[in-house]
Length: 261
Image 1 (cartoon, one colour):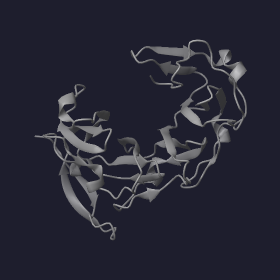
Image 2 (cartoon, rainbow, N blue to C red):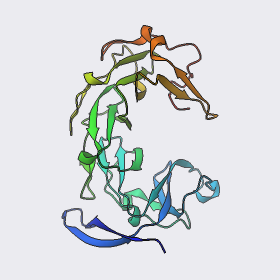
Image 3 (cartoon, one colour):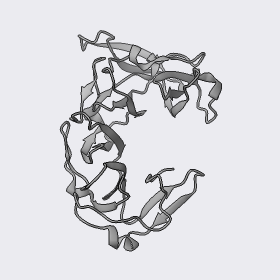
Image 4 (cartoon, rainbow, N blue to C red):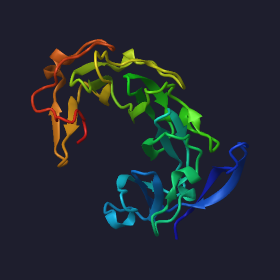
């Protein structure tokens, strides 16, 4: 039998941030989120997702392995982060339930990212206009259904990326297909705000963002799962200061302007 874990669970009332003590049995789950915002948790860890488990016109957005004792962090386009608990997710039978039943996502906003909260970890959050900052996952925890505002954005700008901050360099590529690499030390760490300009664009906005260690080089993964690495010493043409424009990426860089295919 799986060991029981003592966990703090937030009260369901959005207007009260009472914390109640509950005992949650630790069990592995696979969290399934659809493009239209339906969520469910399959028992166990699985890499195979049945496409028949979605409503007509809907499909898989992402799947992640977690445990019932985990907290999840979910970013929406409005820059808010919500914290559903792994034990509160609907079971894997059927199509699950709309996320909006669990948390108060504002009208017109969509889910950008969903991942397991890890104490002490940090991430880079960025808007579609190319502004961002480093934020600790500890500062993203929301204790109510209403969520917690992290990235300040004004329409038509929206939250676009939330990536792991693991490295001493930051690579950013724009929709204009310009790549820039700059020192991570040029990024501030904040708990909330608009952030600073990551890359300068004449047209369009940000496409993708990645932190990496100079000693390891810049890696990218194609749609087939193959990994390619560009040593830092071969990135001299793209090294610059934060908020620079950058230049066309190396030959062979994917046309979708993504570090992960």
